[in-house]
Image (cartoon, rainbow, N blue to C red):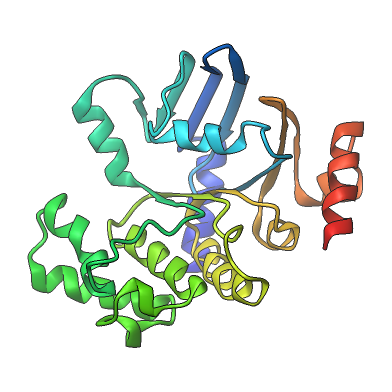
Length: 261
C-alpha cells in the first residue's frame, strides 16, 4: 500500500495537475489586506505545514480553500475545479475536502456515532447501516471505538478532536485541511491528536496543516510554508526551513517558538 501511495504522490509531483492551486490570491477584511498575492501548489499526496505568527493570514488562507472565506482576487483550484459562486461546483469541492478546526465543532446533542454518520447519510445519501459501519471503521482508526455511544461532553478535548478527524474521514475526502487542530488542547492531549495525524500522513493523504507543532512538521511535512503579514515569506523542506532559514523574519519566529517549547 505505502509503495503505491508513494508512486501516486511522485507521479503527481511530476505529471499530474496539483491537488490545490492558489494563484495570486488576495483577501481583504474591510481595509485590512490579509492575503497578499499568495501563490501555492500542493501536489496529490503532499503533506504541507503552514506556520507563522498570529495574524499572518495562515488560517484565512486555509479557510479560503473550501470557501469558508471568500477571496476577492486571484484563483483557487481544488481537484481541477476552480472556486467560484457556482453552488454545484462548491458542493463538489466540499465533498472532496475534509476540514478539522481548533474548536471541535461537534453537535453536542448527537452521539459520537451520529456525529460521524450525519454527513454521509445526508450529503452522500449513504444507507444508515453502511454509514455506521464506516464510522466505526474510522473511530477504530483514531482509537476511540468504545466512545461511539457517548456524547461529546463526556469526552476529553483530545478525544473530541479525534472524533472530529474521524467525522471528516467518513466523507472519504481526497484532501484534509487542519486549522490549528491542537491549539485548544491541554499539553497532555496534544500527542494523541498528532499521532492520529501522523498516521494519516503515512497513508498518503493530501494534507495542509496550520500548526505551531514544529516536531510534527519535521516528522511528516514534505514542505513547510512560513507566512507573515499575509504573504508567503519562505518555503522549503523541513530541513531547509529549520536548519538554514533564509530570512530574518523566519529566524525570529523559530527562535520564539522554540523558546516557548
